[in-house]
Length: 263
Image 1 (cartoon, rainbow, N blue to C red):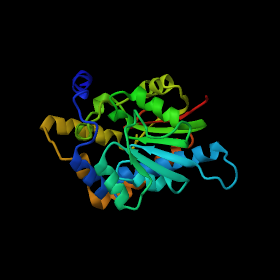
Image 2: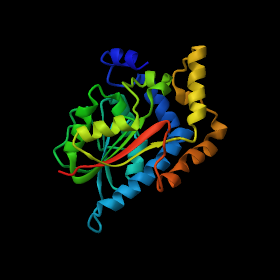
Image 3: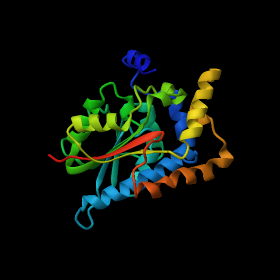
Image 4: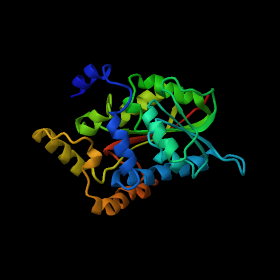
C-alpha cells in the first residue's frame, strides 16, 4: 500500500474531493469522530495556553492551518484570537458562511503570514495532505513566535488506509516516530507525542478491512454512521482526553504531537 500511495501522491490535487467539504460541514457538529476529537483537542489547547504563560489579559493568537469548514476555528476562538488558512476556496466559503471572517487562501508550504506572528499554530489532519510535509512544518515554525507551540493531529499507520484517505487525497499516514522525526527535522522541539483514538481502533480496523474485502466505496466514511449513537460514541471517544492528560497511548487511529519553537 505504501508504495502505491507514494507513486500516485504527486498526481493528487492539493484539495480534498469537493463533495467532502459539504459532507464535513453537515456532520462535523454532531458526528462522534469530530465531537470526540474536539474534546481531545480542547484539552491539549487548554494545556498549551497555560504553558505559554502570557501576560494577564493577553489572549494568544492562533493560526489553524488547513482550517477546513471552520469547526476547529470556532473551538480555538474560545481560547484566543483565531485565524485560518486553507488551500480550498470551497472550505473558506463555508467558514465565512458561519461568520468566520479571519480566513485566507494559502498553502501550508507557503503561508501568507509574516515571521513570528502566532503563539500557537494548529494543523489538525492536515500534514498528511502535503506533498512536502517538511516544507509545511518549516512554514509553521516560521510563523510561530519564539516559545510558540505547534499542535499536530494526523492519521496513523499506513495499514489503516481507507476510503477516507482516498477521498481526502492523503499522501500518507504516520507512525509516531516518523512524525516526530519530520517535526524535529523542521526545527521544532517535540514536547509531547502520543497516539489517540485507541477506543475505536479495533472497529475502525475491522471496518476498513471489510470495506476493502467487499470493495465498498462510500462517498465518505463520514457517511458511515449511526446518528442515534453519535452522542454516546462521541463522549466515549472524547473521554480519552482524561487519560491523555496523564499518559501517552501506545497505539491508536491518530497521532498527536505538541512541539515548541526554541529559536
